Length: 278
Image (cartoon, rainbow, N blue to C red; front, side, top):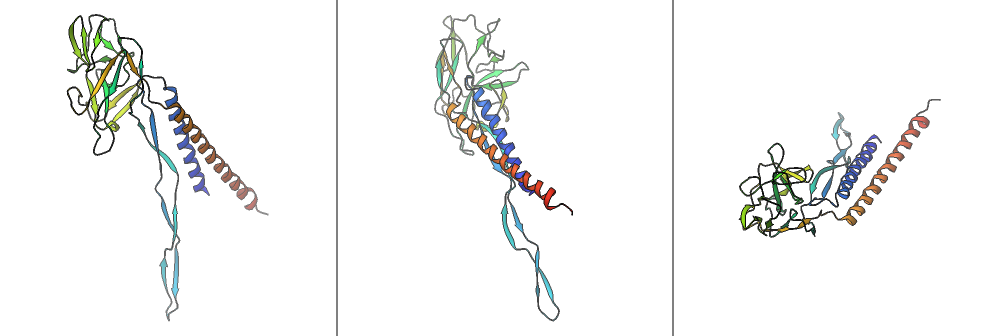
């Protein structure tokens, strides 16, 4: 019976974490470039139950042989294995702002080892000088004319340098080249992750690579893209699907809760009635 307590409790914890993930997706449905999280639930390893038994052979001197007849397998619960971002392309929305840039995926190769499609990112530098990646192209110009994110992180060019513009009057071509006053200023660096599962969310729309700096997709014929100025990539959260999944998670949580209550009542009866001394 105690095993049933743990199994139902594990189911409740897993569904609670799933609801928290879906709630976070809903809260970021209007965040530019946000990539929705996906969860994977996995059962704990099954245990094969066997009964300890023995048989006696009727000989002159009786002999006993140990036996272990198999009863069957039993599961011990479920847990949330991991959260995996969905790097699918979000819808493109026109804003008319010159500093808003949308990164539109082109033809991207599929990783042979994992079977997942590669992902592209803008390259930025945080306050500590560390390289981070983002799909949020809602950029701005700081007081010195540097192109930055709304958090003040510098957007980098193909040479890994910060991009400083002479004025707010500039254009960005489809390949990421920035032109101001008829002069070429820089070209945006676009990073390519062949296996996007090695890129980890860090908050504020930023990602961190677990395997060092990502290679550049600039001049890479196998990873094509376009930059659209005056547009933003919206989040790829499917609101209707998220609401459906949330209701399903709530129902699964309630089902495990009722099972736990049933076990509690059975335990109460066993302790206070069946086990009562008279």
